[in-house]
Amino acid sequence: MGEDKVRFSAPTPCGGSDDTVAIADTDHEKRYAELFRQLDLNKDGKVDISELRTALAARGLHQGGAEEIVLESDINQDGLLDFQEFSQYLQAHEKRLWFMFHSVDRNKDGRIDVGEIQHLFHKLGVAVTLERPPEF
Ligand SMILES: [Ca+2]
Ligand SMILES: [Ca+2]
Image 1 (cartoon, rainbow, N blue to C red):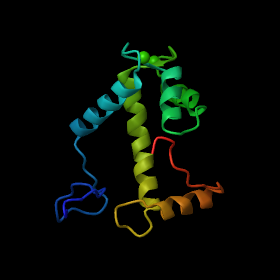
Image 2: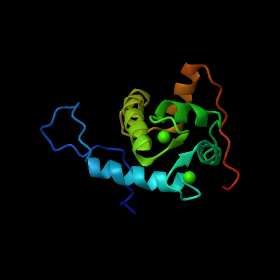
Image 3: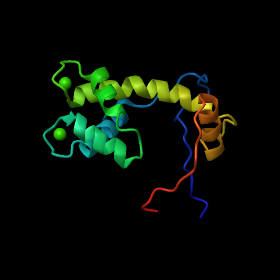
């Protein structure tokens, strides 16, 4: 009790300006490596389209996104994402996500709640129904 600090906050030392969001690169690398490991189901060191599809489906996301992700980030065009391609993709997207996060977090409490997500989707013209994942 009292320890539930699940706040999404950047470790900015006081005195820093608002737009300096400094997150250590090593931290990124670790998270990317972890995610990459999770996605690489057959452990061949590459993430292919079918592995991405599986991952997207497992998260309840549209599987068609897999082709897009590969197309966008497959630099050497071998149809697979190696770790470098993968982390470059994530880096580019995290900037977008970060920006999106701040525009979605309307009351600026550092969290995105269900209402804010609904508001976002409503703005985008998407009807959202709140379904529980079957496992829960
Ligand atoms: Ca693989
Ligand atoms: Ca590749």
